[in-house]
Length: 127
Image 1 (cartoon, rainbow, N blue to C red):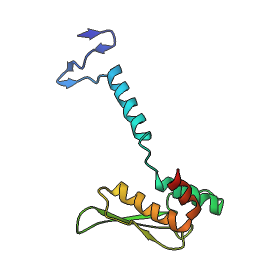
Image 2 (image 1 turned 180 degrees about the vertical axis):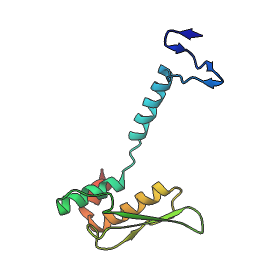
Image 3 (image 1 turned 45 degrees about the vertical axis):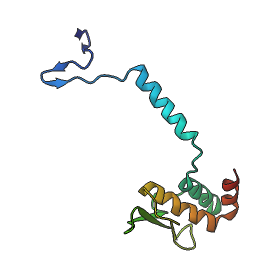
Image 4 (image 1 turned 120 degrees about the vertical axis):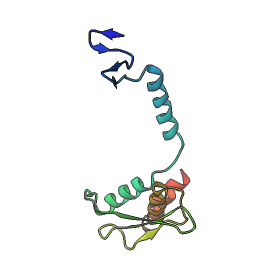
């Protein structure tokens, strides 16, 4: 089908399919997914560790201030260690093997927050 702006509906143009903007149903589904993820109650331990660290030293951070090292666990999953010479007294390792690298990073950040910023950790754990 042709329209003044070109082909509509993803019609092929010279063997190449023209892009089609997502319809209202796709946009609505994306919005529902975003809302359900934020409503899940998961704590972003990495963000909370960054926040507490910045408050402690009262300066902005660079992307290199924290180093997250992820290793494969021979028994399955991932283990992460986080360190920061600027913000942390020592390195901290995720408490358990995690199903994803992202979860391993959050687990290590949680361990660091619990040890270095116990009051912030307690507030988050109670909330």
